[in-house]
Image (cartoon, rainbow, N blue to C red; front, top):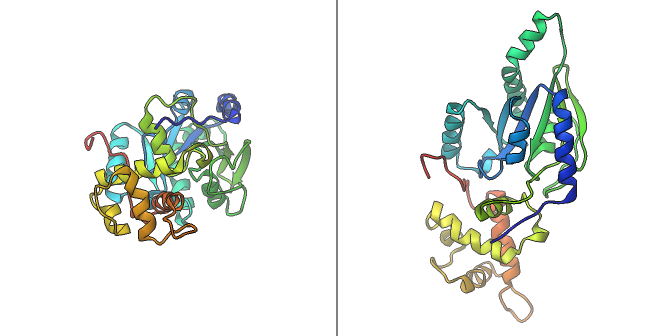
Length: 283
């Protein structure tokens, strides 16, 4: 399934990030714990190379906890400081603040030696669309400072947010990159909702999901929806609609609603905690 989505404001945002890098001490990058590879923008990685870096695996409550731990171990071996969390939880703010102070310890000590005291850490917060940046910022700030929404593209411009005395955050819009070299990357981003549903054929996406999830957890979809395993593509949404009594006029199974149900059940975690991308040792 060939998927591309790169609205014009993303090019502008990328240029703005490049300009703002000279203002900041730390890059806080949010990735999706279910797709730790596909949810990291390679353009951001190139731009921010050389800056102190904190990688947050967000939505960890929706990912397989064991696989997330394996990812964190691999990231540590690569010299990347990481944190796995659910940005909606109250404890997230405390965990992120502690990690920020750890990541900038050398810089703050250097400032003290130069006689610079009490200057807040200035951090740039970046990530793909619909990754939970605004939710995390509001948790850190203790108030609604950033717009939130369960769809990509809610944040459109940059804004500074003051978090107590120790941290200033520069928020940025969610940014993808112009071309996904691997079809699997676009599919993974579409699975988690980082790409607008308006540009993705929902029935086709649901069929991809039907094929992908049993490769990771055999029998999960069949048992959850009480439908036969190994259905032909043409049967999947029909059987799912029948199982959940999703009917159109004339009592015909509604395959469009069935597709939407499967996608929503994965994204919300109702299908269970599922990580789509394993570490190098697993692959």
